[in-house]
Image (cartoon, rainbow, N blue to C red; front, side, top):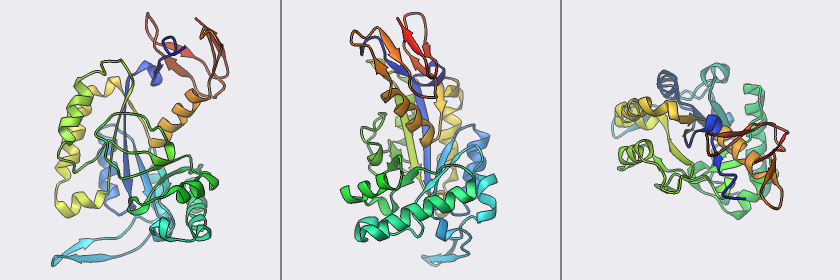
Length: 281
């Protein structure tokens, strides 16, 4: 079965790229503008209880903008991207009672769904802290995936969606090295590859290094025709559809039980298994 049904990304692509940015500070406005200019997609993890905060922070004697985007602008600002949960107030979840954990997650989901008008079932762990109990609470609250801050320097899909480790932070010393490996090389086993970058937009402002992300986006631009540009949710939804597919014992036939077309490697190009259909090869 494995030799016949090797998964590809939509349109038969072997590579995908996704971005994840936390906290919803006003610097997201510039980051979204860059993403739109260079035609990539991001997932923005928001604390609904912090939206509309007006704050200037003094860091090493320098005033830094620490305000967040407003409720009113969220839907339009992040249009074409994804809004995901980051809890209501950004606590370290393992330190909380499970009832408070549940409140932070499910209330944030509801608030963000009211704001965006769509289902919010993605998550990023505040401070990167989590535990088995936290993961269980997320699952009970309807969260489909949760991003950690654990760098892998790899291009693999998550083995556990509630412990989704990114490739790297945008400040990683190996960022461009990884980008070149991802864009210019193929997996020797012809497996699909995912480049996952995360961070906070305010880091670009505080470090005065917006060129870090723009240089990455500029570099990747010529390769994007062969890369699936996706939100975190796009990737998990597609991967879940693949995992839910059914196969005949001899591997000759697949049943796509999902509402998403699935793509597989074929001798003469990609094989498309349409949603809710059965296909034999």
